[in-house]
Image 1 (cartoon, rainbow, N blue to C red):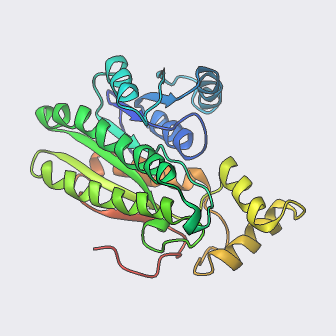
Image 2: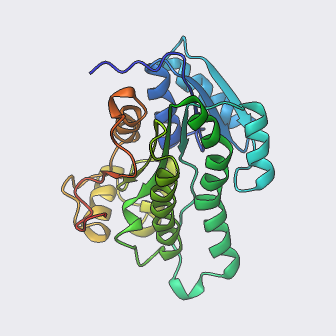
Length: 264
């Protein structure tokens, strides 16, 4: 399959590292102009260097802003007023005993993982529908459905993101714009490495630690390993393409067999 996104602009949030950077790199490889976002310009500059190490001719814009706030969303939209593809990847996660999660933490997870996506969809969806073409993807998680006992505040936010995706897909019905969520299973990023070592101890070699984590905390996985960010990016690039024009309102899974229930 040859995916050509030449002439398209893709905004990818939380793209200074991990899944977001892998997604931006994949979209740039398909010919899209990519907009990287993050809170720090230094990290974004490093991300551009890494991206161009893979895609030397990539057309890249960086916007440093805090998308957990209304001001940050407005700053991004002002710097990049047109997007043909919007990938809402920004998210925070961490383990916490359920009864110790404070009101402030609940709000922070909702603001960062849910409202950041809602605000940007409000900014960019009208232009997409006017032009008759667009792709919105919200990066959700297997934790949306199989809620982890050690981070129910994170699971709550990702469940909400599934509802957001389905609802905005109905708003865009018949316009040529698709809105989907990508359910990502446990994925190998720097933050997840820290999380795994926090739960399994820091003395184990990484390969042994991740497999022990999957065996103990994510036993339904058929891969029995963490997913690599590029494996998530491959699906996102496809869903961003003209070839995916008939897929909308869907929760598409890259979960390694972890989820054992059906998403409606």
